[in-house]
Length: 82
View 1: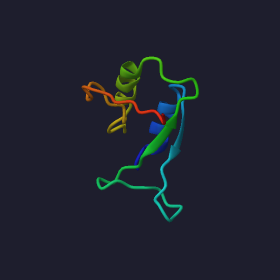
View 2: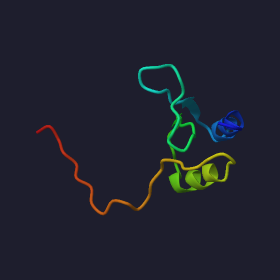
View 3: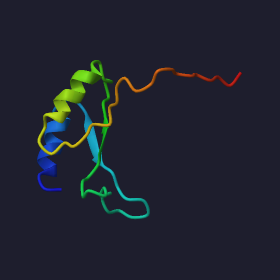
View 4: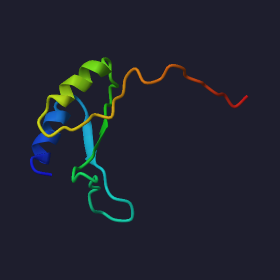
């Protein structure tokens, strides 16, 4: 929580809008087991270079992880209604 407003401003300067995640059944902020806040991001113009963005966000003080994951899936299955 310390410095979270600074961290949020630095992240949003990368072209997104963030909202603090709220706990279910309350208007309190969600706090992780380690005592951190979660900032849910929306990139209105999309993300052109996600790996570069991941590195930029990770360099911001206060960021623990990005939620962008790479090279984890070996196969993707796509289903259709038909």
